[in-house]
Length: 388
Ligand code: FAD
Ligand code: DHB
Image 1: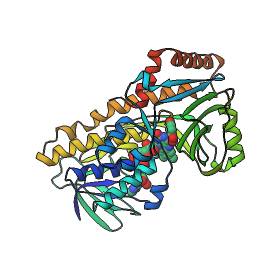
Image 2: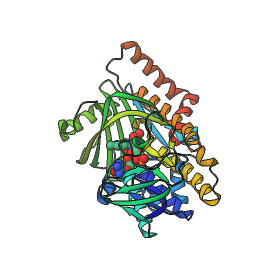
Image 3: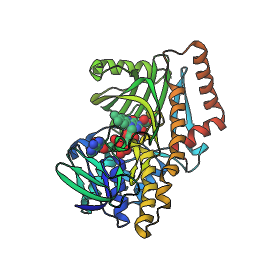
Image 4: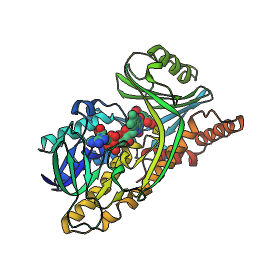
């Protein structure tokens, strides 16, 4: 078998890349180790930047997103017994975010690929990368389940735990990382949101986030110890903790309901540089992850894929490698901005066990600044909705 671009992973990065390449007349095969059902049900991110929405709409996969996605023009920061709105319409006029579940994006992309006769293979075992070294006469190839797929280029879109990044020889990559001493417990609940906008809450008990998926489904996150397990959190304990943190302003009541899904996500930052080796290009979580407080993971994956598509289109049009050679550098500027923003939001809103009273006062002072200075609030707003 042969294709132009062999894509490992059917997450948002791999599927969108396959779709955008198809629109440019470039062939690809997507190899995914999980089942279609599994990837379509995997509950993860929910905040799409303006640029992400624009990309999906322009690519013709935004019809349901425009119909069912929830446009948001602000978020609330809640701390010290009061809520403070960060008003996008005032701070970053004309720019907003859309709340639409990642698994809905994945469903839409899979449907589009299959409708166009795209080759997306699920439950593929033992994917391995070969002949990646720069300057070889023969191209790279992938093996899986006893088969061989020859490619001009390989795109590693297989997430943080995938096989692509480890296939790069030792010594090539520089790795930058930070583990946080806490995790997020995320739940999806069959209950109407108790707020129209997202609420990011800092309390002495820890951080909590109220998000949503639809008028009847809410999404919540709690800062929890890094070594916790979802089974330590029966439903009553989750609701009690969410109430203790979110009902920290007068008059706000959290409505509870049936919990449909729960999971623990470690909080970690990671960047591997460069995002390429020979004819292998990494995109999305395969190359970098951020703590989710800034809602940037999925948006970064989409931004990488946009850059990679342009570079591959130029390469397949006339063999020019300039954009491909500059792929990593072009992506890393945005990646590091998102790293900083995600670190900043995380530091601003979480409780750190080893923090002393002085550190807690600094945190509160910064929150007061962000919620009272238009300059500081604009910093938050323009990063949150996504820089151009
Ligand atoms: P992924 O979505 O991870 O897709 C990679 C795909 O590759 C997967 O389908 C995987 O099964 C497949 N794969 C892996 N290894 C192989 C292999 N060897 N062979 C074949 N296929 C393989 N971001 C937020 O902004 N907010 C959140 O609340 C949030 N929650 C998250 C919760 C969890 C548990 C995780 C892991 C991430 C979360 N993120 C969140 C981050 C966001 O979901 C990711 O940034 C986004 O999924 C990145 O997309 P991707 O396509 O690069 O990677
Ligand atoms: C959601 C996730 C995030 O990480 C975030 O910062 C905001 C919202 C969500 O899943 O809805």
